[in-house]
Length: 356
Image (cartoon, rainbow, N blue to C red; front, side):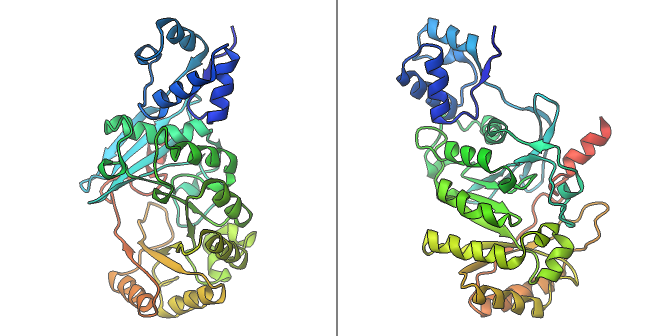
């Protein structure tokens, strides 16, 4: 008998084809889609509006799996991190970050990362492989399982209200699978997250920014972290391939495409490296040069063992933010979360890999 087909991660079109291939009518695919992504069901036997014979047939040909939770940690601030393991034994991290009025699930797109950013713990782990569409979307589904948020609630009642594609890996190096996942997540008949509640963060794979936005309509964040090419190349090797000029031109084009949207830039505050007022002014000059309506998320660095960088002082971060805001640039300071657990991206995976 042929190997069973995994349903999680199939697009609507692929699911319709899979159902047709076993001799069933197209409306069955719509029913199945709702069971998978609206109800979060993993057991064909519980799909109550399908006949007993059809449920048995589906179980014969298909499978619905979730990654295994290998470890989890909950911070005093309620940040919840899972280490998830896939069928081939590879592991990634997923994090739920609750806020007062919402909560974001941070999902990964690769096992390891090829970017090699000097400040990032995942960057110290070599790239192993891309995640499949099913492996990416199932991270959010695991979080919904844990928080019992099935069937899909209305926006205003969700604990898991947002998704940030900011976990392990560079999402734009796994473009096709990421596009498929974002369209699954925002489909109104399933998980049904609004596109405005989904943000993808990239280190700056410039050629893939516009194709992503055109295919999905989600919000864009760019890991900037430095005001010029010299400094950025020191901490982000990808800058040598796609320098600031290419990345910022793509951001300008994104903003033209999306109308009045801000472009969000993530800016990690590193002591005596990128945190001076001169750095702030250089940043602002860049944005004016490329005519970008920019918002800067200033991030307090969360150090990890073996890292060469230290966090900027609280006073330095506030002064940097104030200078940007005095010049009409939004510059909120992101509060560090989960510092009492292995919160830096990739850190929990590293510890568990050492114990294997």
